[in-house]
Length: 431
Image (cartoon, rainbow, N blue to C red; front, top):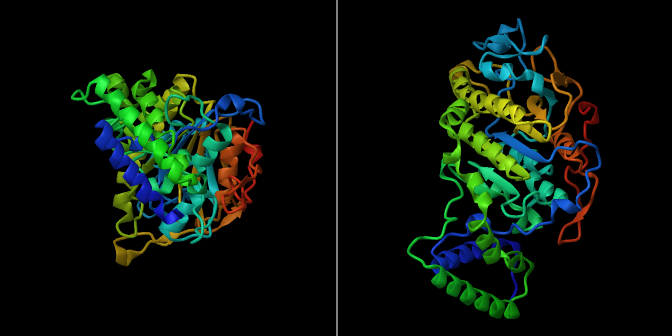
């Protein structure tokens, strides 16, 4: 019997259904978390970051209405006003008033530029460092980090995705064990991870033995790398179910005043969950916030999106700093591309896709904060200083963690790949 990559999700779904039928729980979140231990990883720079919180602004965030403001240029700024920040000489949009007070922890990457102007392709490049191909799926950046740096805590998943599309955080050619564990609502925790009260411990153990027996018989017939990827499914799930660190996913354990400080939105609560996961040794957490595709009514839509971002990001930075975790946690704000400097009046003052120039943000993780890197022209239409590609950006994330960004991993097809393709880390951003 032969299997190909197209069968992968079918097999995965089959195993999930079998597990739920056999055990009374869904083991999907626990699939494939047997990866290298961080004890074997030696960072190649001192004081390297230990974890990454990657905040993905899905839909193409307007750089001009957020990070890359143009004082005095009402033609491109439209209704968006400009405010001072905690760093003299650096200004932000009025849509980010709380974040402006945290500017001393941040670097504005205002020279971003990409070759991809469509959402799917742009997000793929931003989160994987490679352009889409019909013949291969490249690993997500979180998969690379998990593989190269290893697990910090072997009891819980090393790569967690909150409110995002599971297809964007899969392990690609690295397989399911390097995929991000998907969580929908951060307030719901790690779903189906507790044994139902209707099943006794004795019955549960009997079902485990039966499943193990069936697995062994199956593996004598089918020998597939994809199937072997899931061999640790039951033991991984059992370990997670019974470990003390499972409480990291429970926002109910946070004081009300802390939850309130982050704000009520799903994204903001996802930022709080990310902080809890960092405290418990999760290596890479991605929190996604959609709705940035402002072709229409940009000056109403962007402030609404920014309210969630402003609440969550500002609280996250302040909270990590207060707990002494900011220096060892790299916080990233990324998006697939920017929006046009031109305001489209026939679209109720909207902005269209604009890959030529946009902005991202880095904070914590040992960077020299309180600065901008990269510059666009007075209209925000082209990069005129320190152009940065998504590959360079991801290489910089790798450098923050002390990864060897030129380390080659060979795919099952025999092709060489690195975490950031041909991207070069911007080492000048670090102390």
